[in-house]
Image (cartoon, rainbow, N blue to C red; front, side, top):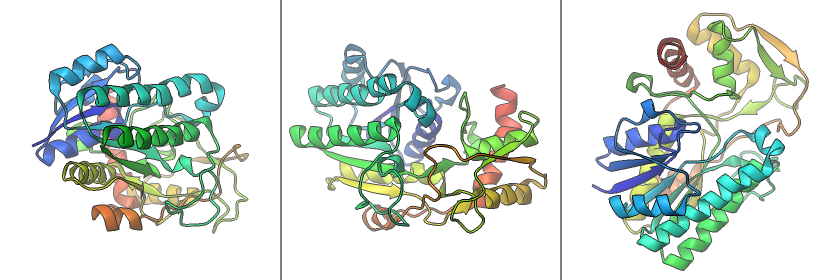
Length: 328
């Protein structure tokens, strides 16, 4: 059993990783300032409250728990907000990562798994996108993730450690039976927003752009269940703790869904009609994002096991039965 410090462990992806790590026999310690996370999501280990930019607090936590590895999920994630407030995002996402890496080096923790993003690539030059794709982030958020990866690479050389950079495509779904799921404020992700129309929390679901070069004119995205993502994190941590080499790997299904197909799937799964309205294209939206996940399969033995219907069914259970009651 290893001890894993999970920054952002009270958040969406982080809490699901804590669940998966515990199921795999590991001990988790959550480090979170609760600015976006939820104390109710901390179920599988102690909560150490603190900011990733707080060097003194971090070193206290490292000294108290002596983690074998760090899983770094703490970040500001709203892409549009990163455009409005790039300095704040840089401070948290990049300076915060450097402060965390410094604390690791000071206490001898060598294994680092980073919650990265396909946003490091920017607009696709080919589909599906593999890890050799050129890096040209289209937002400060994407640049933050790329800068944090480079800091991690440099730190691994300096401390003789190893890293895994896991580049998510579109995380979705929930472990609703465990009382955790997606709960952002504000919410910007498509599946929750569409489901909110069925719960009376929004009047209609906006479809941004209907004239893209895709099979039905709407944007295509690669949705991957958050529990499948969590499984990849466990595999990456165990690889590094077992002496495996550093890597960067895409986490997606390789099977894209357009916005209209997503709406149809939600209606199929829930048996309810989703009211939609057309809206202009949004600046920065790529017509299609699709993962080549062969690196994760080859190096981690990982492939997603849940399809879009299961993702939606779990998200619907979460939003309709759990979040609306406990997080309203």
